[in-house]
Length: 103
Image (tube, rainbow, N blue to C red):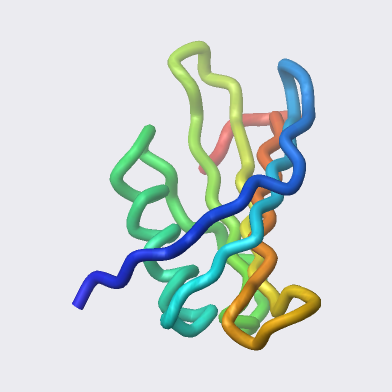
């Protein structure tokens, strides 16, 4: 069952080689369900691949891809409880250019 979420942008900043976005997300879903939807979106766009961070933390994830110029990019996603009501989470997405390509 696909659930909808209310999303409020908190910050959106960065430049040409890195950026960070933060949102407050509210809905009936658990943090792990939200992260699974993000994982699915990353896998289906721009050929992002999961990176093995060595962590079993299911509230975080890392992905990488190589752009058309061969530059490597890394995305880090985390989700945690936001201050306030229990059904709100803070979702953070950090994207940065890597020194070398992925894989």
